[in-house]
Length: 291
Ligand code: TA6
Image (cartoon, rainbow, N blue to C red; front, top):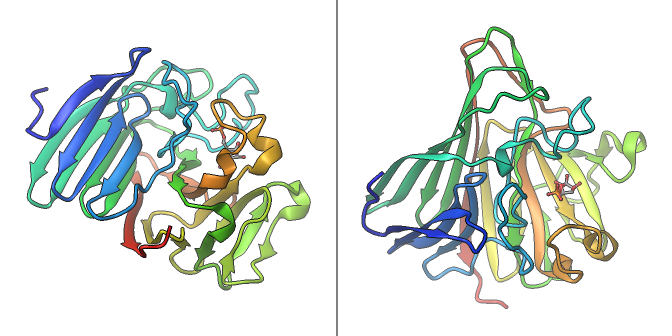
């Protein structure tokens, strides 16, 4: 495909192809593996996404950072222990279908050539629309092209770049319930006691928000506007788990937090024959000048 001015192709040392997007309103990088946005910086704003300094961009290996697409299951596969965590979309090579570059921003559409897999014997199409402007937008659309109802879990597993985890606040939690993934069955349906969450240890929660979430980083305040989602995952591995993660520096937990727009836990996406479902998020930053 002929790329418009402002969009260029590149390749990592191990052969992973990416697109670099330069626009007066923002710049971004998107890898074709996983249709993964790894970098985004709006003009006059801090870089939004965290990317592991230990990431080496190898084919078939999930990229640690940016916005991994967890699809068509979130977490472990329901029954197949050999199936990859968080599904196969993030380690598959997607196709760039369309790019528009205009005064408002750069708007890209990518699609996943659907593999034939024993761990997911269904028919569907999957597309991602990415908006690079003074905001970052993603819309992940699954269309059920088969003869069976689809029940899937998914997440836009966004790693946010923050100055210091101990200064971070996640807002908008008033009245919501959550499943604490660290407590298993005992952690289901807990009530958020505060409207905002500070992090001082490992956190791995599926929350069911009653209003839009926000992030106070504190170098920026972030509005997280979603559609097609009734759950979000808040994750920080803290020190001990950081040492067990692939391509993750031991002190990486200090400069990142994940707030993932999802359909997971009790919020699964049920898609009838011929129907579609879109999981959508838009990130808007307000630079606070703090660092
Ligand atoms: O979203 C939180 C989580 O499910 C954690 O439990 C942790 O596994 C994290 O995702 C990262 O998973 P990954 O497979 O990318 O190492």
